Image (tube, rainbow, N blue to C red; front, side, top):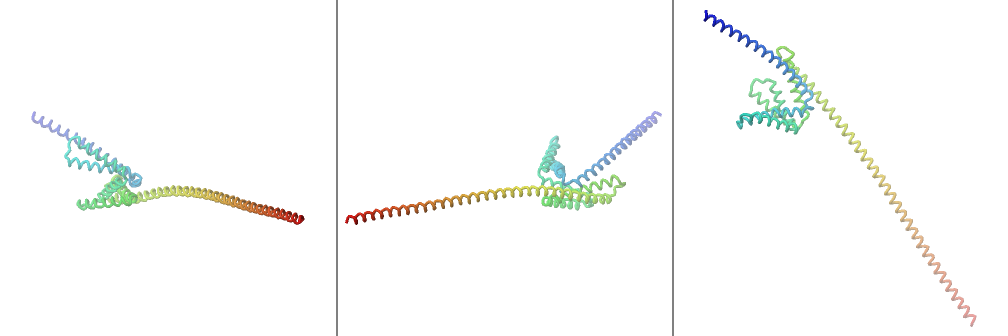
Length: 296
């Protein structure tokens, strides 16, 4: 009886422990399902933001991409130099922060990293079965689009962020709102969202460019008007200078004419005085001749 009672107690204890573990497992599964639901909602929201505002948020996306790439570089450094202890998180954190700061500060670098990571994510979402082909296509496409983004920055960023955000939002929405989460349904929703997002980003960018062109045209008009005013003022000054020069020339010519007239008058007066003196001499000679004649 004692042995049977002990076996019964042991069996009851194992059953109670299994029931308690089962309850904990159900609690864990419920918590996991809630977390998956929250994560999917977050992915949908972030995907829509990236899909519709990718180009405007390029600095933020560059910093996030820099954090991811910097963390990867820091992990490689840790394994390469075989760090241990607190050096592992410190090295990873320092590398992540440094690359994030450089990516956010240097726009070309940030665009390169963003396009590379998002292109790789797009290729990974296609779920190519052969891992070697997947890695080759992923690396080649990501590198090609990153290089092209250095030449045509805005169009490549708009297209890549639109496709990436649309696909992530569409796949997560299909898994969230539809039972089973059909992948093709997610691709369809993602394609529609990508087209709308790309069109929206191009429209916003065109309006931005239009505003810049209006501001530039206004500045050019103001500059042209200022230049025309300056030209008018210059012409007025030149005309006034010409008038002053013509007036001075007229004054000089009048002074010259007056001088010529004065010289002519002086010459005529000299001639007349010479004539008068000559006539006086002749008269005196005549008087002398008459006096001599009378004496004779």
